[in-house]
Image (tube, rainbow, N blue to C red; front, top):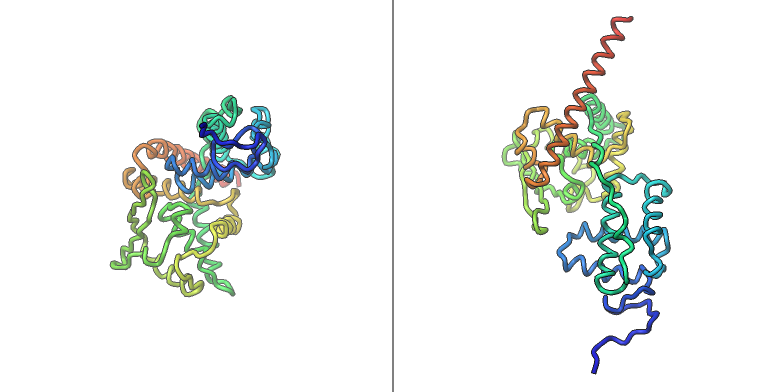
Length: 326
C-alpha cells in the first residue's frame, strides 16, 4: 500500500512541506520555510529578516498568489519596486539580503518538488562593493554632544539622548546589543575605569561576552537616566524603533545632513579609535568581530578614515582662502 499523501490537487492549506505545490498560496508556505531555516541552524535574526522580505513580496504581488505564478520577470519587478517605487530607502545591503531571500526561498521550493523550476535562479545579485557608510566628523560629534546636553538640561530634562549617543560613540555596540543592556552590565568596581559587559552572538549562535572600558563620566549620566526613566529590567525598555527615532532627533538637532543610525555610530566609533591609534586587534575585539569579517571591515575603516581626513584638509584649505580674501 502506498504511503504517499493523498492531497487535493489545488489545496491551499498544506499540512507538511511535501503537500506544497505550484497552486499553494505564498502565505501558506512561510511557516514551513521558517521551520526549514531553523533546521539549518539559521539565527532568529536571519529568520525574521527573511520572513519580512517575503511579506514584502506578498504585499507587492499579493500573499494569496500561487507559487506557480512567480516568474523571474515578476521577481525582478519586485526588486525594482523596492528600489524605485516603494518610497522607502533600500540600501545596497538590504537589497542584497532580499535577493538572497528570494534565492534561498525558491531554491527550497524547487528542492522539495513544489516547483518544477527555480524562478529566482536567474535573478542577478548586485556585484561590486557596497558604498562606504557615512561617518560623523569630529565637528559633527561635538555638535551632537552639545545638542544632547541641551536636552539633558532642558525645561523637561531628558538624559536618554545623551546616554544613548555617548554609549554608541564610545562602544560601537549594535542595536540588538543595546536593547539587551541591563544596569548590571556596567561594572562599577573601579569607578575611574568602569567596564561594560556586552553579550554578543558568536559562532554557531552561541552568546559570548566582551568587555569594553568606558570613560568614567558615563556612570553619572547613566544614573541620571535611570532616575528619570526608571526602567524595570533592561536599560532601554522601549522598542528599537524608538531608539532609532532618538538618534534621528539627535542628528537633526545637531544639523547633521544625513540620518543618524546605529550603523553610522558603529563606523564612527571604529574610525575615532583608529585615528586615536588604538591597535586594530583591540578595535576588532571591541566590535566583537571575527578575524574573517574584520578583514573587510578594517579595510573600510581605513578608507573612511582617509576620506574623513581629506575632507578636513579640504575644509581647512577653503577656510584659509576665505580668510586671505577677506
